[in-house]
Length: 448
Ligand SMILES: *Cc1c(COP(=O)(O)O)cnc(C)c1O
Image 1 (cartoon, rainbow, N blue to C red):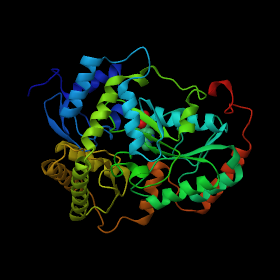
Image 2 (image 1 turned 135 degrees about the vertical axis):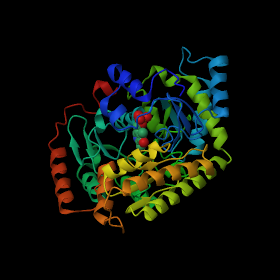
Image 3 (image 1 turned 90 degrees about the horizontal axis):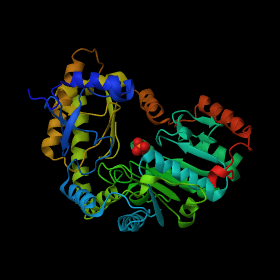
Image 4 (image 1 turned 60 degrees about the vertical axis):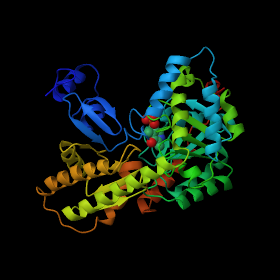
């Protein structure tokens, strides 16, 4: 077998382990391949083996790798325009802002950064600077920065002055009633497989009722919950939204869109970033916006995503593994009895040539056709059969308890007002009330 680096996957991973790889993030939670190239949704590893990506590179890709229009735009930018300039403005940035604010109702003005984590952190800095208030309420994953390290737990972190309400409406109302005038903003990540647009419209109205900024973290949904996210497709009103994954089809770029006067707090919030001006990712984003303009890309993704979703549901039913398959076609969840069962199935499917996200959220790209869906389903079926043959499974429906446990495990969703949850809300109220208001308040020099 030809090997690109002369080493096997296992040897290459050992080499990585010595100098760069994190044991869990890079190795323990991934399948044992080191990829050297990818075209469309097919990846080739160091041993020359081709594997189909069913993760869309964690959502970073919308069109698939090496999309001609994006390759052309990026090459042209690098070759003919340059990577960065002494000043921060470029025609590409201005045009991209114009097109994004036109695309999403929340946008009157847009600013840029590199990653999703940076965009959400920018959004809360803007909210604090604009309002002069210190508290942030949050639900869901917004990246890895300090202010939401404990995103899975309802509660309050006095160091960052961020309270997590766990997608629980009772908690949100209670915190707003108690501390409304100290709250700079509420930021939530859409979980379309579990909570519908009505749920988010309601959150948006509650925030408006209390005069608090409502921010939707659409880092992943802006181009995957329909073509224009919860804000555009779902019509949920927001004061700010964040956009990133897929926007530049794999290149690092994120955006914060919002009401003019909120975004205008940029200077006061002390935001900066050497690389926010980088031109090629903006050229890539413009090419993506051109490509998706007529709707055909989303139509294709929706169609292929639906085939995959329905197919996976059928496979699990026929193999006799109780499962709950839910969510929009372009980012749906497959829930089985336990995380370890989920891992075992996808690990087995990987040996048959398909790389699934082990947590169970699956995403196609526009590079998917029926052949790709068929390949994914065949690998999934072979993997599922292999795992099922070693287990004693009682067929039937997935228990309701598991359906409720999954949102808590996956995104900190405390969706039911159980006694424990109600107690936790009261404990959190007490902790917020006891915070040191002199410490790190929004008007200190760090925030302009
Ligand atoms: C991925 C993601 C982030 C973090 O983005 P990074 O680019 O990994 O920093 C934030 N919010 C949501 C909703 C995401 O899906």
